[in-house]
Structures are given as C-alpha cells and as structure tokens.
Length: 103
Image 1 (cartoon, rainbow, N blue to C red):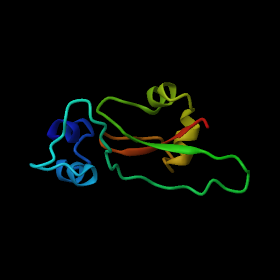
Image 2: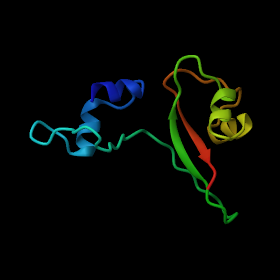
Image 3: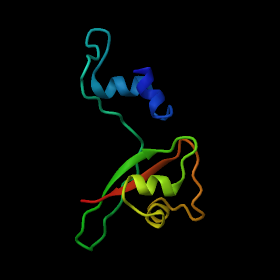
Image 4: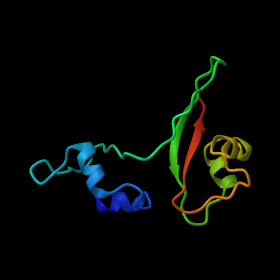
C-alpha cells in the first residue's frame, strides 16, 4: 500500500489506508480488491438553488495547471478558482482541489 500512498503524493499515509480498509497482517489486501483512500476534503453548502453539485478531491501533481485539470474534468478554470478560493489561480504539487462534477 506504500505505492498507493505515493500515488496520492503522500498526503494520505499507508497506515490511514490500512485502517479505513481493515487490512492488516491477518487480513491482507488481495489482488483486485477495491480500496477506499481517505483524502482530505472540503464540504460545500450547495445553496438554495435546488441543484446538487458533487465535488471530487484531486491531488495536484508536479507540472499541472488549472487549464489542464479543468479540461480533464469538464469544468472551467474560473469554476476551479472560485470553488477553491484560489484568487490568482496558483496551484502547487500536493494541493488538494475540490473539482465540481456534473450531476
């Protein structure tokens, strides 16, 4: 599970992944098993508009920018900046962004 933790840029530890999934020496991870990865997240009040928005936590990796991330998840740079209170729109490796997903 160390490689899973590393894949999330180390913002979640191997021990945290083990605890959430109930894995240990007597109950090991098996090939093909679905894992829950407990990422830090921010919850939002969707307001009174009646529309529900679902947000995904996303860990920024080295070299990414908001334009790339917005295109990947079919949102806009302005939405990402607004939802994440980014002002200037600067992001860094290991930042955790809330990505609005279409419902």
